[in-house]
Length: 320
Image (tube, rainbow, N blue to C red; front, top):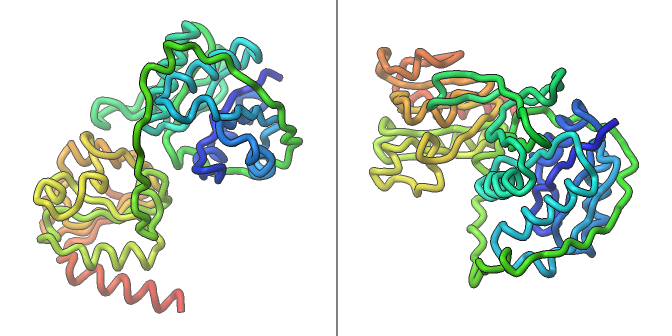
């Protein structure tokens, strides 16, 4: 069975959920091999985490020579691993950095690239991906026709499935060119923790729009009752009610949670492009003609300032 390389998404050695989803997808295509680029002392901890989700091997790459630079050294590392392992595919988390790494890798190995897949299944001529394209107006299925398929996958595209495996650690020391070191990180600052899930990775997202009137307290209270992330429409961001980091849409973040709740959002195509691959969509809007109702699984016609507190109270009672 051919190997499938999975780039581990982690923060300081703590493996993030999208990695487990990618390992589950990789098991459909072949033998999952996790590629961990980070501090070598944490490779054992990473191996213990990913072997529960089917990683037969962990290729540990010490990032001492890599972490001070942008993405080019990571792309070179993956190129060398592709040359060594000859995998059936390379799966990468569909983050901003992940997509840049994947694009550089595809160029280096002369392969096709598919980004923002929401599903990957085995096919006769290689992995078959599903994507939402043209601002969410179309759903396509695609295959890479040249080289080793390089695919970036959106969070929440698969339910992580535990499948205990060996998870043995194999160290790898890449040879990084001087050209890959021409862009250096001179300063970085961790984003302040909100206590809520990361917007692009959350299983539940509760968003607010122009209908909030700038008061997101009910939206945030409802989100907290569900353990959800908070998002915002472009109108809310442009009004200065929320920072751009909260924006869901074509010019913001793309989310694909199990549940998306849109509150006071009209449903313009710009917003729909960022959330319509959500598994279940609920909308609360006092305008019964709002375009968002064309997209939803469940709709509530009403004032969010009345609906959300009642819903939050009901959820809290059930939890109690």
